[in-house]
Image 1: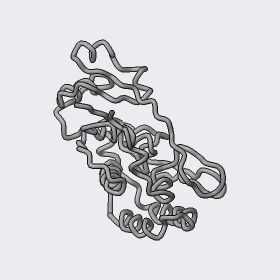
Image 2: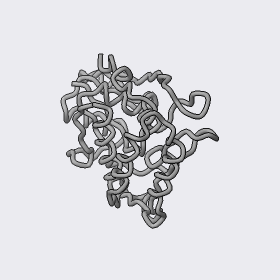
Image 3: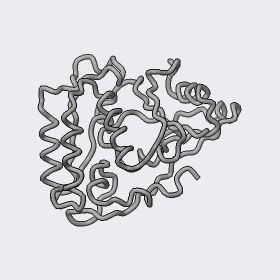
Image 4: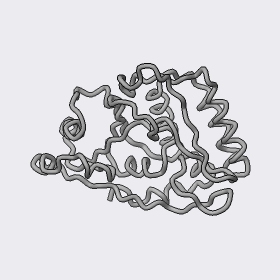
Length: 228
């Protein structure tokens, strides 16, 4: 059984979905601490001026001592309306805008109060749009309380995984010998970003999923071969 783990991400990039496509089970890591300036609550869209970062603001008080599952959105800032406006202005000429934008409006109409809840709900939406049926499990629902390499190891053992797909940064903290001794093979993601049709000049990789979704419907070709 192939397992991957990743923290919540707002408008995840294609590499996030590559890990999902290659997995039997994807664990949504919402029981770790929020990291400021990470892609947990922000991502980029493409504009006529280049990349624009969209950030879902969080309430700063106490977030450094709480888990992602407990991190609250700061909805007093009316950030959803701003993000929708940015996406409207920059993707209204996209090939799939007419089909996609009403879905975005409905997606953002939900009254989320917690960052992880919003990311999890939106992740389910994106998987449906991309035609990917995957088992998603929230780490906060699992009987694991360890940290770093041990947390990953304990989650793998819980699901009896024999293969774990790690991000490249896993090389810096995973205890590979412990995994090998338990019969778990670690595969480090080496993602090669595809080029797809884009608005606004030269291609920019690593945009949030909305850029890919608005510009092309070649979803199957992107994930073909994943998990092999």
